[in-house]
Image (cartoon, rainbow, N blue to C red; front, side):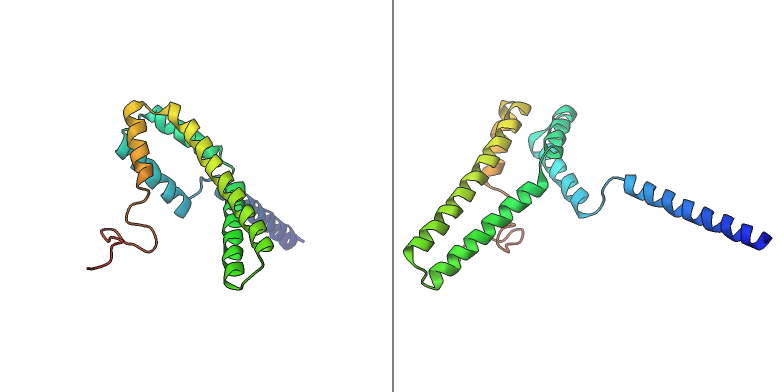
Length: 160
């Protein structure tokens, strides 16, 4: 009988420990790629624009208010529709079907542009005039050296 009480006490203690550990783990801030990417993004902005702590906090708030899942679904729909349109063109689909798909792609592209403009309208008031100009230049050359398989220092030019 005493062994049964000891066993129950040990089991309850172990379960309580697991529940506590799980709760503590869940309460910790996210780590890994997302946090690293966010940290690099913040450092890059602070370095390039000379953001104050208040400005950086305002950027963090904007970022926290984004609906990431909706954005992800939107861009997934856009990529899918673009791929379908390309396949239709390659496979000789009729003009009416292609026109409908092209209209869908154009609508999704327009929505993407509107989302971006809405974000920029929120960012503008956070920055001073010089920072807005520097930010605009950054947007003119996004992730330079990192698009389409390019590595740092490589150019997109063909040898002559």
